[in-house]
Amino acid sequence: MQKNYALIIMCVALLATLFTACDKDFLTVVNPNEMTVDSFWRNGEDVEAALTATYAMLQHQWWSEYWGPGEAFACLESLSDLTNHTSFNPIDATSQYEADPNHYSVYYFWEHNYKMVYAANQILKYVPGITTLTDEEKNEFLGEAHFLRAYAHFQLLTLYGNIVLVTDVPVTPEDFYQVQVAPEAVWAQIEEDLTFAKNNLPTDYADAWSGRATKGAATAYLGKAYLFQEKWSEAETEFKAVTNMGYGLVNDIYSLFNGLNEFSEESIFEVNYTADVTGGRSEATSINPWFDAWLGLWPTDHLKGLFMDDTTANGEPSARTFASIVFNHPNSDVYYFEGQTFEEYYGADENRVFYKKYSYTDDTDNWYAEIGTNYLVMRYSDVLLMLAEALNEQGKTAEAIPYVNQVRNRAGSVPIDAGMSQTDLQHHIREVERPLELCNEMGRFFDIVRWYKDTAGGVKAILEANGRNYADNFENGKDEIWPLPVEEVDANPNVVQNPGY
Image 1 (cartoon, rainbow, N blue to C red):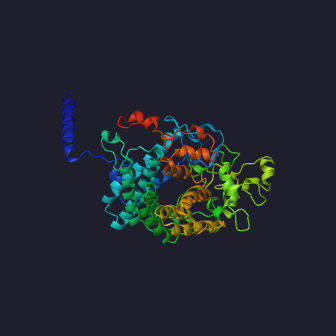
Image 2: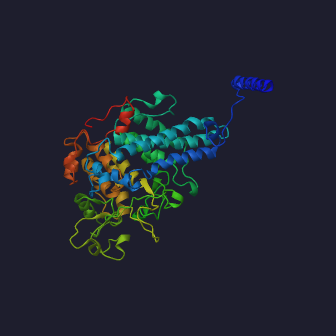
Image 3: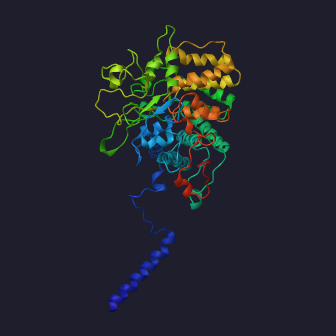
């Protein structure tokens, strides 16, 4: 008994000594299976892994309630005045201008973009302290993080209007409950991030790293940020810089959207996909606009009319007409026709046209929702048209017209008149050239909001004039932006819901 008692006393004394020694870290034990800040941020490979996770947010991969990345892109495109939408419940609310704070698309765009911000902020916080990297290596990694943070804030600002600007990794509970800031503050941060990115990113990467943000992508997006703020001169400077970076227009327009010409000379920034779904992974997209499928989108009659008027000098449809839409013409074809004509496939009474952009082309038997076609976020023709807009808004119309004609010449379309007035060119860029060149590329709605939200009749008048179904539902002063998701409003007492919701 005495021996046992003595043993207990010795054990207690030993434990007391050990616990007292905790101040000297004698009991600090590192779990090798648990990732920590100190064990992760060690070298360039760790940073590349973190960047991969940040880029992954661009894919809008399979959410719990929706059917793939194609639905995410369809949500954005279905807002356009140029696109009608079949009734399909998951995106009916957004396509019919009845976005609801409880709708999952409203939540997931918010969530995905703030996840991108959070991941980018970790890179910005921890990379400067990695001693195994040179300053040049650090700045290149930081440039990518700055670009991705700017891209996410750009998406959030244009979608929701009234957002929280997050530039640090949250540490305290209070850090998670920040207030919204004025749009001007968000734009200023976007400009700062993109300026750093363009000054530190390389012009290109090895093929194995295709898809990473480059100097050209940062410069083009900086120009776009200026354009959206009507800083015309600053936008002109950035877009002109892009024109001197070696980009060009490819001859085969359709090849940009069928997966056969990814990362071409026209590509400035694109989201990379594969069709690999082995092992439970999801690296595919379902962006394919097959009309018979569940994400049916098709051009309005207004856009159809624009394409029917977009002809060559001999009156034939332009190359971009054949590349962009499927219509009743002997030379119009798409993979799912499988040798049939338009009338044989759709029926002799079908008067609509359908999107061909992003239609899949492959000799495999993949289901259309598991394809590897990349999403082309920004391409050189867009930059040329934004440059033309920036020039024309400054009264430099004669200088702007050749940039528009570069795009038209590639398409085989009749060039516009070199003597066109500033007013006529503004209308042409807004209501002819950009619709023809960039339809079904998910950006049209944000253009018409920035152009028309403060004009007589507002955005609603444009939707009605261009024959958009559900235009009657649109409320000026409300539907230009989405509501904040109810999850955010309920969780953060410091945010205020957007007006009208």
